[in-house]
Structure formats: structure tokens, C-alpha cells
Image (cartoon, rainbow over all chains, first blue to last red):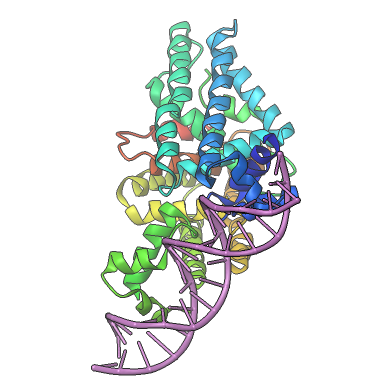
Length: 185
Length: 185
DNA sequence: GTCTATATCCAGATAGAC
DNA sequence: GTCTATCTGGATATAGAC
């Protein structure tokens, strides 16, 4: 069950929902194709579950960040550093963000998956906008619409994640200092 | 023929290669499904042609930028402004970048398409790195590895493009000034 | 050039034995 | 729980008439 999830994540993240065949997953695990249907009712069911997990994982990271006892500009530094660390060390994180990127960029995903994305994907933006506001009050974050700052922040972060994910042999991704320049005074 | 290309681009960009059915394209154009095969040998053929066109379009934009009679930091401003303008006005540009994003993020695309991407996608990074070097010599671009600066630049730009492409009702995307802060002194 | 009809294949899902 | 076998639908691609 957990193995099915893992293998499905790996394949959905790299190939997408439609190019991934149930047989591919079964073969990779060395089990019969029919056995998958003992655990899941359909391919879409696996997909929807994974999308939900992925969004929750992303959002819980953001929640933890919010709860940290740090000043706003320190939270941004922490977020960036955590991001750079995770992207270098966690295969699972890369697959997770890749899955979300694939899903968000496709209109041909199950209704339920779409609903989950719609419901959950704005959380990081709102949380970051709040941090920006607080930082502006303290004078450590640059002026400007906090929502736009938040969008710019996550757009850059996810752009980097995609860059990293789609190059097999990336030696180095840019230094965290560059990202910090985006919003900090 | 041109209509097939256009409709196929629209659908591949939003749904990907595998979720797009030949019949979907034919139906959208009001022609018979079989007729597509009068113009193209296979679905993959259409896809590969579109990928090639998309990459060329992107790269020709960059080439034009390079050829402009501007100082390096002005080129960066120009690139950002052109980008913001195009993303707001050109449906075709959004589809084009979405197609490339989809393709680059999937391992399940035709061999030929993969080869095209491998061959052509680094051009913008190299061109931008060169501009960064020149700007650093002039003192208008911040210090740091020019390759990393270039990666950061395009990661942010493409992150924004994806953000914009995947929200139907985006009112505003961040101001160009924010992006400029990334690299200019 | 465009259509209808169809051959062929493949993948999702089910049935039922062990 | 796991397998093999199979039903069923759908999609690519082809054939051939108009």
C-alpha cells in the first residue's frame, strides 16, 4: 500500500497522470497489475490521494514556518534556507513539488484533484503575504503590495524547484542570498 | 494545417500530450478525426513540430534582445518589460511557455521532442549569463556567479509565467520593479 | 481534401481461482 | 492477498468511397 503510493508518486511526478499506466506501477513493484485494484478502486483514486498528501505536506511546512518564534524577515530567511536544504537532500520533496506543478498546469485532471488544488494552493501565498505585512511594519521588508511580494517570492522558489527537477545533472543552484534580495531591505 | 497547429497547441499546452486525443482536436475544429492524418502522420509528429516551434520562438526573442543596442542593465529591464507586456497580451505566448513547461517537466515525451529540448533550452540561460558578465564589468549588475544570476532570473520569470497561466482570474501579477531588484545594483 | 467505416491495439477495471 | 484471464471501452491509425 505504502509502496504503491511511493511508486505511483514517482511515476505521476515524472510522467503525469495519463502517461502513467497501472501496469507500469505494478511492474516496477514486481506485482500483478490486478493487485493494485485490491487497494485502490481506480487510477484516479491513487492520484487524488497523492495530490491531497502533496498539498498537505507543502502547507504543513508553511504552517510550521508561521508558528516559529522568529521575526518576519528571519522567517523569510528560514524559509529560503529550508527550501534550499530540502531541494538538495530530499528526493521526495522534489517529486512532491513536481506532482503539484504537473497537476496545477493541466486542466485534464480529475475533478476532485482540481478541487483540492483550488482549495489548498493559496495557503502559502496568504501566509507569506502576512509575513510580508509584518515585516513592512517592522521596516525589514521592502515596500510594495504584500500580495505581490508573496507571489514573487513563491514564483521564484517554485521556478527554481522546477529548474532543479528537470535537469538531471545540475551541479549547483543559485545561492540563497539572491532570493533574499527579492524582498528584504 | 495552420488551424490544426493552433488547436493542437492550445490543447497540448493545457492538457499535455497524453490527455489530448486526436478526436478532441478534430472536434474543436469541426472536422473528421481521420482528416488530421491527411496532414500529419501521427499525434507525436504534431507534438514534436509544436515543441520545435515553441523553443524557436522563445529563443528568437532572446536573440533579438541580445542584438539590441542597449547597455546590459537596460537589456535586463527591456527583457522584463517585454515579458510583462507579452504575458498580459499574448494568449499564444502563454500557451507556448506552458507547452514547454509541460514538456520539460515530463519524461514521457517523444524521443525527438526530448532531443529538441535538450538542444535548445539552455540558450536563454547562456545569453543572460553573458549579459550579466557585461553588466558586472560595467558595475550595473550585482556581484555573484553570472550563471547563477541567469538561472535565478529565468526561474523567477518562468515561475511567474506559470503562476499567471494556471490562474484563470488573476487580476495582477507583481510589478516589474520587483524582478529588477533580483540582479540590478 | 474530406468523409465514414473499421482494423488493431492497449489500458482500465472486473471475475474468480488459489 | 495475490495471481491469471478476460471483458470492455476507447484511441490511434488506416482504407477506401466521394
